[in-house]
Length: 211
Image 1 (cartoon, rainbow, N blue to C red):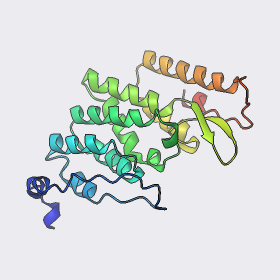
Image 2: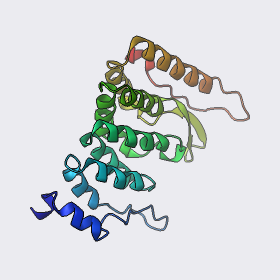
Image 3: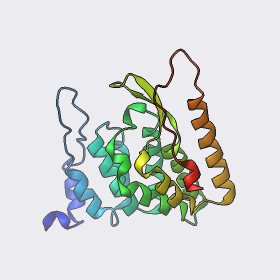
């Protein structure tokens, strides 16, 4: 019960409880958990600014368990702070090595997107649009085991169409057209790849299903 109480936050912060964020240990076969994140989720609504600053620092970690916790906490924060964290989450999409990480399947990601898109604040809505573009954009993904690259996206194929349709409900017609055009252009560009290697397997998301 004690660590359910937000009054512990300042004490724990002063003692440096949130200062050690686990990264991936290449020598270990498992990822280190981040139990501090469980408490931060409980106090996120009462300490939104302070929790956000901790999560922004934690966002530099390459540990999937830490990143998933950040995604789970983000929707509990104020709109302004959700927008701040969405920028960090969007930056994760730029690294192909994180594209197959399971934190992209967390439903909290899509709750975050929906809350940003439905915000009356234009800046927050824009952050939501950017996050949709970053998480759903088709891009090449290296498959080291299969020995080829294939078009993919951070949001996995099995839920891509449904999740994109869900987000699209909160986009204006103009925003929807621009995003779908960008997705289709990127996807077709990957399918038409004619460099030294060829894609021996192709995957293009069901963008049309979400229209």
